[in-house]
Image (cartoon, rainbow, N blue to C red):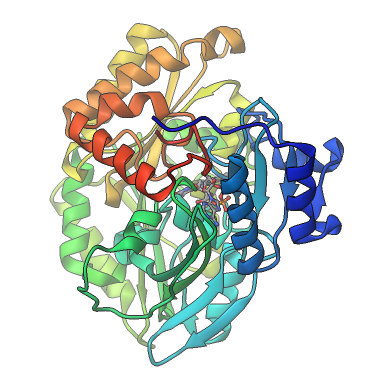
Length: 476
Ligand code: FAD
């Protein structure tokens, strides 16, 4: 039985602050505030101290001291996580370790096609560094202007590019991690092949700060696309979407780098609240598919490729209409519809969220069954299912009925989650496609995993963090 973390004494807090220097240790409640609340205000925590280490050695010294004194540590990156993992509990006894100062680029290796960066580097900055070197870092999320490399690895983030390039796990070739006792594992390798035992890197990726603090990573880079085409398809029958996706993938192969699903209601929300975004079609369609073709080869004729796929889809009756962006500005406008999909739901009142995955072929069945359950449980509620269709990842969000009180609607959150997740599990899917488990879904995990899996996860946690100081109460 592991001991519960203890409240840190004033001596412990002073010793921790001395490691980073008083300038980088925050004790003032006002200055701490941004680290204690997540962006949707779903979780508000308290902390004994916020520490901003500047080096891996600082992180090592912090964890060594925390382990000796049984002080709970909450690692934090850009604080954009959507499951509450980066926010301390309300006890005020935990110490937040914010990685933002650990933000250097340690090197780019063009022959290996990799970059080595520190965990606190903001994702968009890492993308820019790769771009300046003539390469692509393909991880791309709507939160990329704030989220950090350590955070995206700790949550195994997905986003738009997973279809072609994989999620954060597939992009990480090596890691540097500070372990619970303060020892440093230097696994900063850039090897494509390394079958020398258990893959520790894969355990840390997606561990949500519960097994160690990631301080640096070697990331895989790709050739930069020089040709790009964006198209949007309208369809009346959601059931036809998987067949059209399969057709596009078979024809375009690696050139198909994004394939997203948008419902009409979501497009209407953007038109209403999205500041000047226009309707992509003169006639509304029940569903839209937004896809992108790219190529690193100059002069590659993506327009002919897209026209062939679209003509075949129209002939087969899978799609009802198509628009190919004629300019960069038009492509950006189509993508704005997709990028604003989450944000505009806030203007429509309360929204109950699900981040789930099923196989691509089962997405229509999932959405149909989930919509039926929503109507039964909360008549008039408005499902806004959208997301990365090419990965089978649906953000199954439900906006409140316009006339319902927000608090009453949100009181259905847990019951609706349970009903929707039951459908997901029945279809062999996952209750967390890309956002992780954190605090939000911790109690759902035992229902979604086999007992043998939970038991193994607990044993791994105990082996890596025997005193349970790393983000206790999150994930498990
Ligand atoms: P934080 O939120 O700070 O932390 C997240 C978790 O990682 C916490 O458990 C924390 O303890 C842990 N952690 C952070 N840094 C470290 C570290 N260095 N070492 C160990 N543990 C650490 N996610 C997707 O997958 N796909 C999307 O398309 C997507 N879109 C988003 C859009 C918006 C607008 C927002 C707000 C979020 C979105 N997310 C998406 C959520 C996503 O998880 C985060 O944006 C990102 O992966 C988290 O990075 P972060 O640096 O903000 O981490």
